[in-house]
Image 1 (tube, one colour):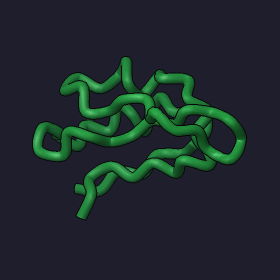
Image 2: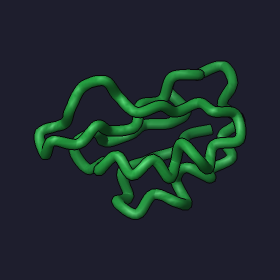
Image 3: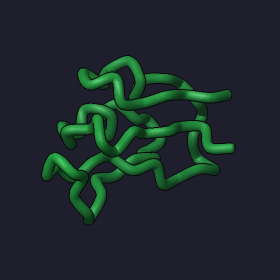
Image 4: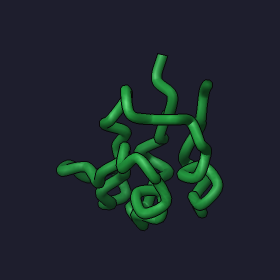
Length: 67
C-alpha cells in the first residue's frame, strides 16, 4: 500500500508539499490534471518516513498519509 496518496484532481501544483518533504519523495507531474495543473506525485516510496509534513502544508487537502 502507498504511504502517500495524492488526489491529482484536487492538487493545484503549488509544490508546498515538495518543499516540506525532508526526504524529497514528491515531484511535480509531467502531465496535467483536468483543471490544467501539474499535480504532485509520490515517487520515492522506500524513502518516505510518513512524517505528514506534506499533508500538513497542503492547502487543497489533496494528500492522505498512511503508516
